[in-house]
Length: 346
Ligand code: R5P
Image (cartoon, rainbow, N blue to C red; front, side):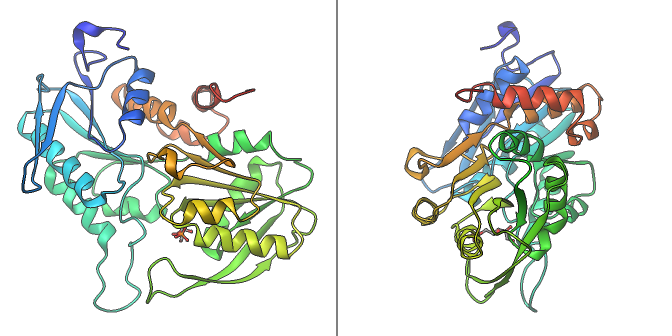
């Protein structure tokens, strides 16, 4: 619902939110948090698969935020966002701020072998070519991805929202934070700080890179016997990584296992795997749309809409986005309250 409906998509005459078709629920929630509507936009497919975009109102001189999350159909959604950016550039927007709650191809950020692409770099290059002036995303697969764009990248974290929720679900005296692989121990350390400096463990995992989504699991490093384990990862795709980790933790005597990940991709067969894994709870955010068919009893979805709205507002008002990375900052506290307020019993 717009607080200033005579401006339609504009909070002031300059802040404009436009959204592609990938995640309308999130777009509406971000707009509501900003107190505006998304700009009236026509987007459709031609019979041959090409896409068309037309903004129904002027964006001349506006700071425009282009929200599109990269979900299946991945390539179409990315192309749609690129075309939206191109249309804004040609319509004289003052700044074009790309919001990708989940950035597609972010796992392909380096070459393991000769003759492989670095697809994540290509995505950033495409944004640059289209006319993006800023990129905003949440929990990029690796922080170094920020260097793939020669301009400001606002790398936001789901951690404050996820940890605040989970803090109230565990005994802080008996919790262990678990990294599903050695590469994410630094992130797990930051999580452990949010759980009163809880101990850490990690799973020694190896991957068969000749096959997609195939992980060979190793051993648990750290003491998890009798502990309430919290596994933290950036994303759950097919669930192979996480379910392997859950199994290893139970085999090593874990009392319970909560899984937390920012991006719930939940490709088949993630739902079945997770449901049958014995996991206590799986907590993700709504950076990606999660259809009813993908949901299951132990799944909890937390909203990043207040975080994205607050970050967009900070950019627009030349405020601090860095403060949104500090879990103790008052803006973050407000984001957390807003993200959790609709949960039952909260
Ligand atoms: C790996 O480095 C990532 O952080 C995820 O753990 C992984 O990509 C998840 O994929 P899946 O759920 O298919 O195992």
